[in-house]
Amino acid sequence: MIATYTAIVSALVPCIGLLIGFYSSWLRTRESALRREDVLEWSKDVIKDLQTLCLLCYLDEANLPPERRHIKLEQVIFSTSVLVEQGRLLFKNRTDNDYGREKIGAYQGFRPRILDQIVMAHQIAVLWNGAGSDERLRMRLVAEDCLKHFVSLAQLEVGRGRTAVSGTNEPGRGKALDYHLQVLDGKRIEGARSRMQF
Image 1: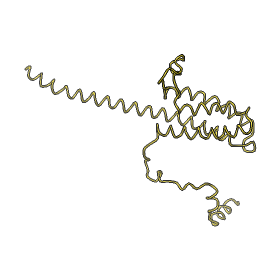
Image 2: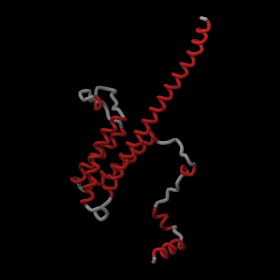
Image 3: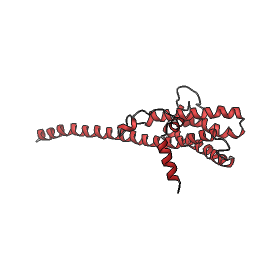
Image 4: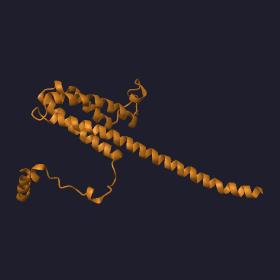
């Protein structure tokens, strides 16, 4: 009888170990997927604000009236401030040395580069109205760099290794709008004109 119990226990121990290992692996995979989803959603909000800032820096008063620009700029100021703090939940500061040890936990050490891009965008939005034309030009260039660096860093974190459909991953031709406007077929243009007439 003892031999039977011993055999049963001996058979169950590896099975239990296998189940525990499977469950642990599943938990790590699920946690990783949840983090990726959280970072993706946060990144989309950041990209919206950084792209908005770039457009605000680029468009002149003929394209965007000052009162509209002021409202959008205020939104970017508040939103980027919030997004930096939310980002601290996803990306911890580096505490390799004593830098910032006097600060509260989440603020000790050096902020990650991905958060630096949002901080700089926030500072540009705050300083934009008081800046001269030369400083605004430099701010516009920094805002564009912030967007590009952020997207590149976020893509490393959450970007897919491959697409679901092969055609969407084919390389583009890199042609700008002016090229496409020049190569339009005359028949297409005439067809479009005739459809516009009632």
